[in-house]
Length: 379
Image (cartoon, rainbow, N blue to C red; front, side, top):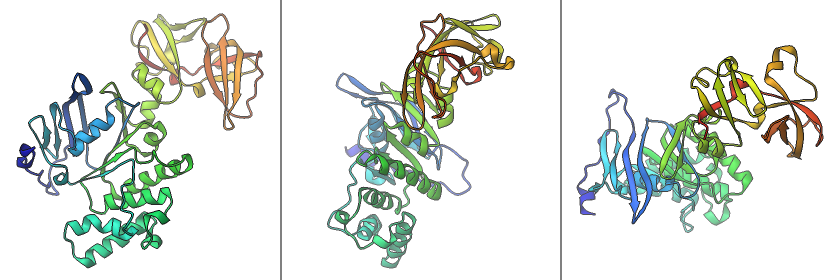
């Protein structure tokens, strides 16, 4: 690793420098033996942006994070920070020289140090004066709502409080990039939900450039400016959460982000024809039906309406009769499975709790073509 020590640290940009990516991953790959963990991945992250790498186990997200941190050398491609290369196949800048902070799944806080001592550790390594350390630690602990717990030890804290200590320690040194590797995986469901909003609140306060790795779509949706959905070492789609959910571009993204119905349609003339019914082509969002032939559509369960009677005249062209096959009450919603009349489709439909239908009832399905996303040619 001698080549790594020869790589210069990225220079700080002057305040009036032109805007550019804080982090730029250009064609990076990582191959272990015969297995390709990350495959020709490209990603630019601007200063102050919060980007999540989201995907199932084995998709390459943690390997990508470790390459950004400098723990893993890329097999191909480069990683740059503020325009300066910090990782390449021949040389890697050492992790401690990258001006980054990383938070792991385990909190990695020292049990023999108090909360304040844990948070002060990185500042003391940088040889800051005692008063500077005291002020910075006190300010940070107040920001993460741990000011009154400064003298406690980790064993005296809850899981959520320990995670706040880890966040405070990582942020107090003002890193140029903050890296988080599934930091909430050890918390129970209620604490995870609370900490999602806490992480977003802290990001809005400090505006650190942040890369967050998770397999939990809820965490990614709450915390992120953009989400990169990864599969088999590649980014399938990167977009803001709302756009990713409402306009998925691949089958994998449509199925991984929330629940959906995948429906094959035939685009031709003035209609899009599905199995057993058709919808007016003009009512789809612009560009969704531009291509001719078979197209796969992603249709979210909550975007399909259920009615006891046919729709009023203005919506009649978007309704079709069906029969209710299954139902489950989930508290906040009813989940139904409905078969359109004369169709082999089995569609998942979600309604509000007061919209109650019985199994076997004849019902009317009401579609909103503007909420149906075309994700490519049908197979």
